[in-house]
Length: 424
Image 1 (cartoon, rainbow, N blue to C red):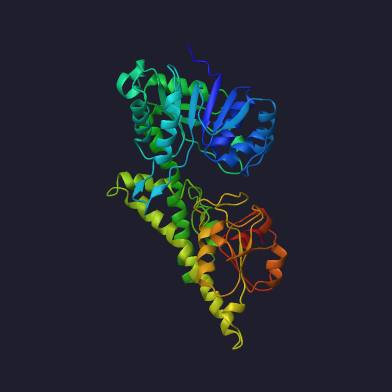
Image 2 (tube, rainbow, N blue to C red):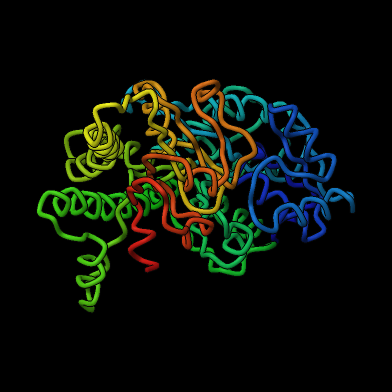
């Protein structure tokens, strides 16, 4: 007999956790969202959101108003717990930081009861689900867990990674297939029952370790493809070839699909996930490591191209000084049409320019209202028209929809996303 899930708790109300909580709540289920960020908790309880994602504001407002969703800073009893917290790295991509998962597990443990399901959604290195289970078991010796009791465990534990695109999260949560890796077959069955409350895509069952590796593999594949495109862009620049035209021509081959180059790779998935594989198998993950290094080096190449443009500007007149030159950067989010700055190569580029350039740095970013603290006093948020009319050198770093029909600027504009080439 399938378990009934009447109360669902989502631990971590960020870019994945909050949409997931709203999705369950839209099915008239009682959802308790948990987050350590008090501002986020207060914002959600007012029926508002603290992140940018199309249609999420409507879903959260409706769920809170109708009483199906509320947020709190401490876990409460529920039938299922979904852990969607950050998984960064310690230091220089050497060791994954699972402290957020550990903190979530230890916070949830006191309210667990027999029959509950705990699902890890955070992108994690292989073995993280088992580690979470060990932390739970350590905190609750009165309950049994899959690693010791197998199919007869009191608590069910599974791994189910998200695979959604920012900007389309609300649609893809429903329609995308889900990979579900339970620590036992009964754990998988319970997790499938939970997700089928709103998922219309197929729930494909495997074990926890394979599910963890599947998520990392998907994003590593994309990272390798992007690294190929980014390396092509550097080669083409040296050979005086238009990389955007080249890729368009190559992609006419029926079995070729090269992605688009850019200033680097950002976000908490593609820019991070490959390192989880490298950290576990450093000697074997040679191509994956190289792709990561190619993409990590691309912002430095962009900065050098901008410095060359600055030198050219200075060389045009003996009266020109670097402190008089204004650089305008178009976009600092990690991808188009969102406000997410995590692991953003565009932001890293702007931060470096703000430290090394003697003149002003202007930023055009239509998706944020204020600059991050790292740029306090070092850059200024301006409108597209002000930047186009007054900046001496511009850098198009993100292909936001607002940038796809920009008029000709007064100064020089370097397009690192191919926006102008692809829309001309």
